[in-house]
Length: 420
Picture 1 (cartoon, rainbow, N blue to C red):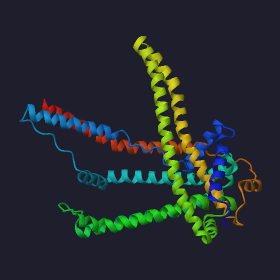
Picture 2: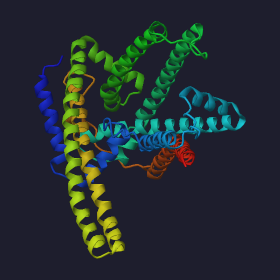
Picture 3: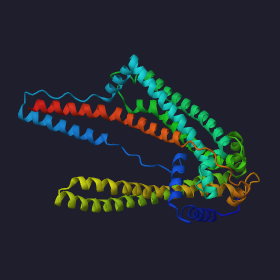
Picture 4: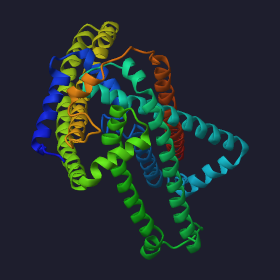
């Protein structure tokens, strides 16, 4: 039974976060922890940008509208530009291409490559989840030694994650078939179907409720695995199913404590997220203003006055690359602080249950499990995986953005010619 109060657990987690990151401060340690936390998937939301395609497309549409308006005013007999294809027409065109031998080969290759990348990243994330646990509980930035130490447990977590991923994929596939079958019985996917509120509710209402409940259950299970099962696997050196049973056995008589943890995690997460967003926004403004002043002054001196753009270009690269790296590091540091805190809080909450299966404190665990020999660390395969992922992401973005940009550009040119 937990005897320590929640306020004490929060305070102790905050103090441990200070000890890990600031006592003493080490840039090398911060970089290592950023690397570990990122590959473990513990850095939070990250930046989800929308990309640059939207602006180009919007500008092209404005050009098209302006050109069409000019054609109607100045040359009434000019032909109008063809309307943009509807999403349904674009979808049918894509399906028709996939049905061709070339399309099937391309789609199959992309799916196979994406699946291989997913499995590789899943394996790597499972390894680094244990390295992240070790880094926080030991106040360490070691990578190679825990990479070797927790290899059996990481392999067990990887296999379990594959099985869970299979069931999740099967559920989503069944859910999609459910919606498609319901709509097909109503003829919703045929041309000319009249959509109404009742038809939409009949097709989507119940599946939406089931999906929301399934997402909620999966989130609760994910938190259980990440915050409690993985630490139990690491501390007791047991496989996934054994650790899942032990973690459930710890909290089964204390379901109120488990529910309280979920509520605290949600509340603290909202608070930490708000503080982090404000800090990141402030940091972006500060670094942006400093960069604007410094590089604007250099531009005014070497381009405006001296007309020496090669020197400005060299200075911009020499000063800009470290400045951008430092700015990204400073912004990422905000998320690292919250990542260390929440990992510490989860471990402290778990140990506060005073289970005979667990050590009493961080210090007891580290004393009974001294660091071992360092093993080989596959740095080159990890770098190759990151580069291949960037290539895959860039290819997907290019496949979406380039055709849209070309189509918009051609329509703008055609509209301009019609106006002339």
